[in-house]
Image 1 (tube, rainbow, N blue to C red):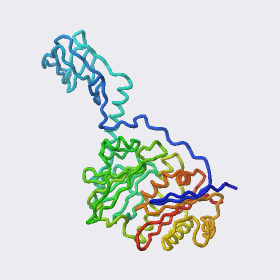
Image 2: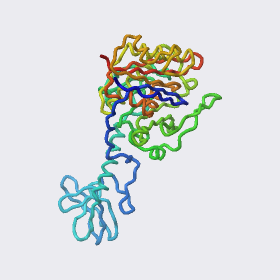
Image 3: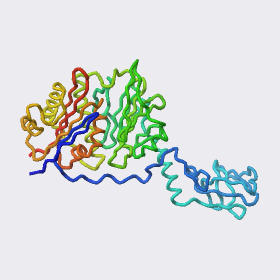
Image 4: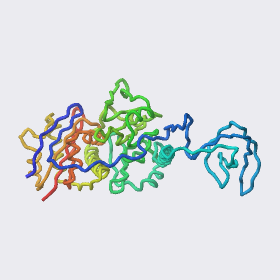
Length: 411
């Protein structure tokens, strides 16, 4: 029989868990280019080393500069002693200062190359620039997105009243994209390829602030200022007409683990903190959380889970009970545990667990919070689990969402 671990409670935007213990896989190794952005300056003896540069020269004696085109050599001008130039390429006996201009590599010039470590940093910066160019962007067309990401695997309503279009390859390269008139107005991803104003997965909070400035303290809608929670787990910024929420993984060095971008115009269309409750939104949150769970598992080297309809029923009933009766606990008012409730749904398992969350405005925020709580994270990344069902319910008067996740491995 497996050992049952004690229940843990986290207040504020609340989450609760109950789980069995298993060992987790080790996290993926850190990327070699972590910390290097397109704005990173790489210095070589006080002078910036630029992308594409392979060396530098100093003119010791006046020497001629030539233009080479179609194997034809044309005199351009004379470089004077003391002048310094970056070198970007070479030919036998010649050094290029860029633009097709060359000098003779002889005693009239002194040529040197940077260290291998410096060149590696430049290669990282070049890679970052290339990745940024490939990233999807606010304002990009739907057809362009589909060329990059393929057709959406799921379309579901979100709290802003538009649809998330969810793209992935067996939950790898995971993106959620929202459109208005076939133009991108909302993005979420946990993928390394998303670049937002230079911010991407793997950066530290300090590096994010250097790129985006200080986090905002609130969002004003009408006469109400809705305060923003900025902490070690998430920060929200306003940049170039967009609200950018950066999520951090405190269990992986507090590095960026996901990014959400919402245009200012879309944010202003949402009344209050929560979306307008509806059955379609309830169903959408459930399926979005299922996708987010699987994207996190694949990102951590695990297989995705299967959907459990009976577990959804058990989870949804418990979320509804908590919302109606205004409590938050694994044990319901009839003194039934999660396992009692799963038994009633006919779920037969050899291992099972439950996560709860409350008060998060979307499945994304709830998921990111659960991933930063070690116990909930263990359930999400539990290698032995094979199925999960998610149930969501909105509280009638506050519109506050309650989230329940039931995990299990069937007999």
